Image 1 (tube, rainbow, N blue to C red):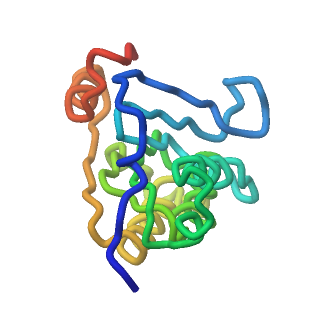
Image 2: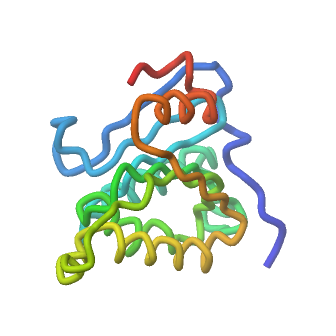
Length: 178
């Protein structure tokens, strides 16, 4: 096991914001996730539903393009694509692919992880909690600790002030209008 190196260093630093809607449909409203790049920062927003491999395929293809088709570099898991993760909410169609294929990938490293506040689901709704905050938040924490021990969690409160805080924390304040 060697030293970790980051393919983000090969990204064009043209100060442009790029956004990709990734998923099973060309319709942006049906995207599994969004990938944003800004300078050498990469943001993954959500991940998609169980059995959807669109996001992991996109991220690995993106990583491969950064290797400039150098096969030795492309198969070397010491060359990682560093990402920041944003989870909009903990419904299965937003986080299951993160859990089953994206977080365990040896070719990706997650740095900053932005999560919403804990959803106040009443105790009597525990039987449906698998499709929500309690189950997926704990699973996400477990996998981040296992595969990405250097990650940093940021809890983003709800409301307009939290959106402004998120924009300023990520450097996207001038580029993205929510």
